[in-house]
Amino acid sequence: MAYMWKSVIGVILVMVCIHAQALQDLLLPQARHITGVVIDAGGKPVVDARIDHTNDRQQGYQTDSEGRFELDTRAPILIVRKAGFRSELVRTQEATGSTVILQKLSENRGFPTCSNSGQYDGIDGWGASFQFPRILRVKASRPAQDADYGARNYYVETKQGPKGITHGSGPLWSFGTPSDQDVWRSVKYEEATYDVQGQMIIDARGQLPNGNRWRSLGKFGESASYSNIDETTAKILDQFLDGACLKSTPRR
Image 1 (cartoon, rainbow, N blue to C red):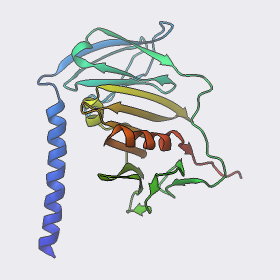
Image 2 (cartoon, one colour; image 1 turned 135 degrees about the vertical axis):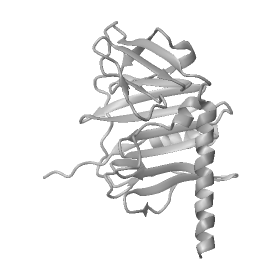
Image 3 (cartoon, rainbow, N blue to C red; image 1 turned 30 degrees about the horizontal axis):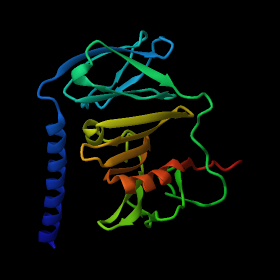
């Protein structure tokens, strides 16, 4: 039994090291000093826009009262985001002194609340609020749980085996942002944000160099995402994610 546990721990450590090395391989050889200004379509500064995916674990970055930002980073790509705006990708090798324009989303564009029809799958408890429609070809696994999170998979059967979405929720599950690795590898990127009672929901997606797709729908503590999925399967999973809604709050 002791040998088995040592083997399991060894596999976990190897996987963690491989992931960490993959991130290191994506970083620029040297840090770059990046400055810029973020404005809206009318030329007004966007205050408190977040500069994310900087690889800085110690500090978060935001624009100041004039929409300006400044940082040193080895990250190849940054994402500028603020709730209510369409986020923008910035390639750091081209970013010094750049002007980033955020397009404001429709004032009436909100994240939908689920109906009471009961035709949804999700996670009970752990602060989870995302619900997903039951659609043809997408299967839902049984929910799993640990001391501080709940999770389940939604998947499509393919010739290469099941491929799909991991949905999880819990206080330490997610920051709500897509993974640095997916963002930094993207050759195409698209993202929209929502402000729901002061909480940001991020719906991001991208294309990898091999043509495969990734997508992440998340908020602090909860996410549903897939990565490195072929385009045909990704279209089915996107239909599933496009139907996401927030669990309705019972009336008192």
